[in-house]
Image (tube, rainbow, N blue to C red; front, side):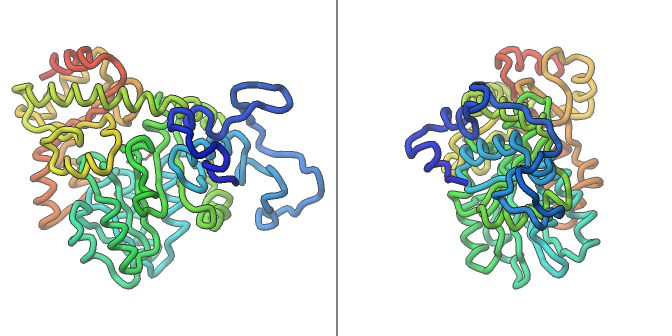
Length: 405
Ligand SMILES: *Cc1c(COP(=O)(O)O)cnc(C)c1O
């Protein structure tokens, strides 16, 4: 595959890449927008082997589990946005994370993950990885000292999530990647779902792999699940056979087609998400019902300086605590909200809010003890509302929330 720059020219801006990356006029029909190829199998031009082990790139498409033209178009668009050599799409964000973790780590390896991160990933790490002989440590990834101290000779992977879900803590990718690579850690992975390729380019900062849940901002409309792993071509080729053909969590071409349409407007949507989130975050900070607001774009965020350095866009995710018991407010939200949906997920054009109670999440997901538990209480209090600020007018979002406080 040609690099983005070879293919699209040195000087194209991200708005142009988001629209034209991976797309072309169909030579058969002259169709301007991408074809949806749902075919699960392809008729070969000459005799090839039966096993995926026999496939080589010159053979073209054979079977959609090992490659599909519509999914490939989305992969190329995502490479153009992220500035990576190559990409593989999967059925969900978790399928992408699973493929990367199980495809790169073996029994006897050690990996470091953030002490707070996306619940689905955290539960997979705590419940499943130890069964396969992969040892996992959890570190405070806001601290260089903590991450450095967790590295061992057999550490193969450092996983970062920034901003992280749901605490909105940031990790300094450049500093942590440089420290970990220097100590012999092979893979630095960044789950960049909250930041999107518009906010942060982890590969430029030293990461080896980037993961996104495409279900969130990149798809952007709450109607298609997907995930992607981006990185060097050689690494993704090595991952490909196992992670796609053998694990099989591949993306449906229909989802690729929907997500491609969403991705085309990502740069302009992210500008609007940021503008709206800033207005809502400032309004929350002034509201007497609100105790504490976390938004990387606010000077009150504990790592605002790092946010300004590492993020070109602060995204649309806010966490906040209330003075009144959050559970009571959450029950009122289910009853009273008119535009904002009380629902999980994030990054859609619709605003979404959810209550994350500290007791609950410490029991089910994070299971922190000692200092990690103290840090979590200090940060989250009795719980936070996670708000994904959508593209409705900020005034309407605020007045909808206000009727519940
Ligand atoms: C949602 C999410 C995921 C998982 O993605 P799915 O598409 O729901 O499987 C992973 N990481 C982060 C940060 C997320 O927000």
